[in-house]
Image (tube, rainbow, N blue to C red; front, side, top):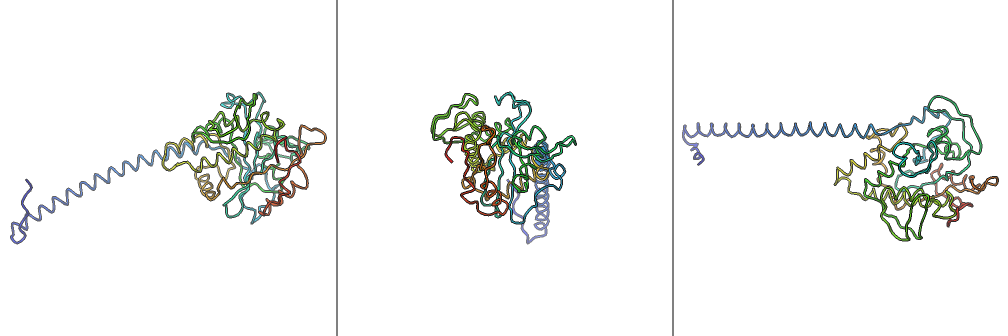
Length: 366
């Protein structure tokens, strides 16, 4: 039984009350110290784990110093031009990519190229695909080893990456568009596959059967949930759509990009820390960015700044191109459509419908 309550009206009662109060304060103090000690230990453990996770993810990201590589030979950044990001999909056949049936081409190429324009306000976006078979003038560029490469005309766009490197691809896009690229992001095939698998797949809908023995894709018309391997086949398919050229698959790439972004946006990442880490690990392992984004905190800050962009409202456009008069297997920028398109991007203004029409359609609806 507990001691009877002391009678505060007597001297003995007051002494007993004092001793009881000291014991309670001592007990409460001991409990507080235990709780605080446990909290500190948990905090240190959590802090150490968080630091390890951060260091692991942060160390995955590779950076390219565009200002150092390109120098001052760049378009001026206009105050009302929004944000412009060059996104490349690299088809390197080395390492883990060698197991993905991407072909036997030596070296690496920019298999997919998108200029993502996010107007001021960051509530919408437009993605402009540059066909890989487009003939362009490659400017004089510096290689990563310090060597110089002279300017050249009629160079196939997707070969620039393997010939000179990513900074020269950025410089080429800036020279052909007059649009300064604020950021650069590159993801390789193996990383793309891992990212899709990490989020549990992506749902796509196709309105016709697609069967491509080269990529391995075999889809009936309808809605499908694609895993990483199937997604890679989907964005690389060219023989199963249109006339079998690169122009035909651009529509599939644009569709998939929107479906992928929508899938990521609706994932309950805060409710699943383990899944969040897996996705972040896959993404950062496959990601190369410009040096201004080459850290986890900078990427996170940039990502949060784009939270207002709804992938469902994103507009996708193919750079207007025409079949080359000398080599019909290649295309060139169609004028005046291309110039009108890039002017609208530079001025952060609405893109005229006339600037979205491409004479070369690859046998698909334009």
